[in-house]
Structures are given as structure tokens and as C-alpha cells.
Amino acid sequence: MDFTAALNSARTLAQVDDLARDLWRTHGAGLLADTDAERVAAQVEEARRRIRPADTAVGRAPHVPTAPSNFPPRRRRCASPDRLASRTRRHRLAYSGPLPSALAAGFTPGQLATLRIVADEVRTKGECSLSLCEIAARAGVCVTLARDAIRLAAGDGLAVIIERRQRGRPSLTNIVRIISREWLAWIRRGGGSKKLDPTDNSNKNFPKNASSTGNGQPEKRLDEASRVQSQRRGGPS
Image (cartoon, rainbow, N blue to C red):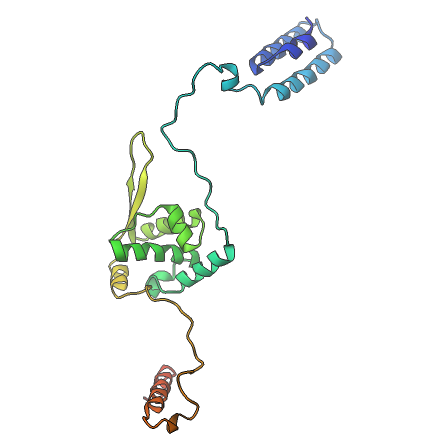
């Protein structure tokens, strides 16, 4: 049998596999020398590499129409176009106080930023129905970290995750509801909702000679600020 000619005329991987079985069957029967069997085996591997890219279902049956899929095409992985801005936003959200300090101690900054987005949705809508990609993009984290943060909060008894599966169709986004009384009370009091704008300490509104203004208000404000700082340091009020 001329294996070389048969391999050159093969068009599918199934045909190459049949020739490979015939090769080793012939070699086992003693009808083919070892050197010839090794040479043909190398030709078999070369034929597989040549045929594999073109041996597809569409190539084998081009006249058969392809059934449309009920599912949308797979989305690309979410990635931040500006990692520096994402890191800055992540830290700003994490350090804005989205949870009481006793609860926040068990989470990383990235997880706290994720829970801040969830808390903001609960504050405005009563529950969070955003997708993981939306939560991750707003928090400046990856989808995996956002998923793990929500699962960790649910595992600690702070929230519950409600899945909305649909048979034969893509599932709807999960709903996250906060069940921790301490966290809900923190949200009602406005915890984590304040803007973190930098404080202007230049005192541009106060003249250098405050006593010369005539109304006495600058001096009063400065005295009040000194009293607050003294209280924080533990001094007399």
C-alpha cells in the first residue's frame, strides 16, 4: 500500500486516522520495516497539521445551514481603559466609609469599594440589581473581585443574593439585598454618601488681620476651630 500517496490525497482527519491504523496494523504483521514505519508516521503527523485547520463542520458539510443560537455572543472581558483612574476611584470609594468600622475591618479596599456601589444602589432603590460588570466598572475593580466581595458579604450574613435564572434564555442579573441591621442603619444615617473633596486649608476667606474687620466673626470662627482641635487632643474644652 502506498501510504505517501494516500496521505497526500486525504482531506479529513478521519481519513488520516484510518491510514494511521492501517500503517501500524501492517507494521505489526511484519509487512513493513521499522524505518519505513517511522517515515510514514512522520508523514501522518504532517498530514494532521495540514488538514486540522480546514477540517471543520462547515468545511465537511457546507450545504447544511447553521442553526441560530438562542444565546447572545460572549462578551469580552471587562477591562479598565485607565488603571490609574480606576485605582484612585477604588481608594476614594473604599475610604469613604461604606460600612461601619466594625464590619469594614474584614474587607480589603477593593471589596469595600464594591460594597459602596451596592450600598448606593440600596440607598436609592432598596436593592442592587446591577450586573457584575457595572459594579466592577463603577468600583474600579475587576469582575472577579466584585463577585468575591458580594459573596463574602453574603457569607458573613450582611446581604443575600437572589438569582434570577431563566430556562432557555440568558439569566437576569442577580439582586443583592442588605439584611444587616447595622449596615442598613449606617446607610440611613448617610454613611458613605459624602463626597470626599479635598479640604482647603489656605483660609483665603479670612484676612490676615482678623481683628481689623470690625465684626469679630473671623476671630470667633478661629476660636471655635481651636476649641474643636483641643477636644480631639483630649485637652480642656
